[in-house]
Amino acid sequence: KEFTENASHEIQTPLAIINTKLELLIQTDNLEEEQMLNIQSVYDAAKRLSKLNQSLILLTKIENNQFVEKEKIDFSETVKKHLTNYNELVEAKKLNLTSSISNNIALNINSALADILISNLITNAIKHNIENGEIKIELLPGNFTISNTGALLQNKPIELFERFKKDKSASESMGLGLSIVKKICVTENIQINYSANSYYHIVELKF
View: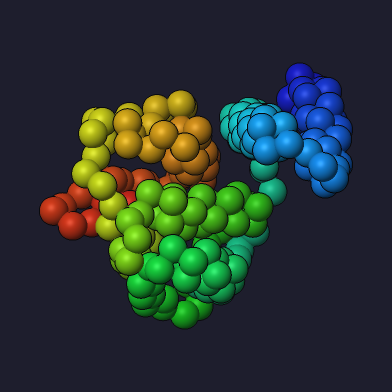
């Protein structure tokens, strides 16, 4: 726990400074095109490193049981809230999202982990989709399913939930999103399964 807190501060702070300074450089007048491209490349790399740091720290916190407080939450409303938050991203990628959310489904879970769980699953379905693809979300008592179109999987399905294991076609992914999802499910006693057919990738949660 102490290491996690120290790492969060000591790594995230200089990264924030780097990003701020790069943003100022990007706004500088009379930059040559090559200079601008180099600065933008460093800026993108620094943002990626910052996101990686945050994800690793989150995984460590979950493993160290630093999300122990549980409460009865309205899981139905939590899912609906996140679907609303991702409307613009779904529209930007020209995806067709359909959902069937049963009302008043309660779940005894840490509320922060519930938010991360749903957010990562929706993000994954959007990021690894295809243009004009589909996302289907269904919430029933004891069951949450999210299905999305996408390229055929090139790795073994079980590897998707391992750290830094990502499908070969997902070059921009850090390979931590589903690892975090898996760790949350283990912590919260939620069963998670992945399957695929000729059209959809399907992640199913049973609680």
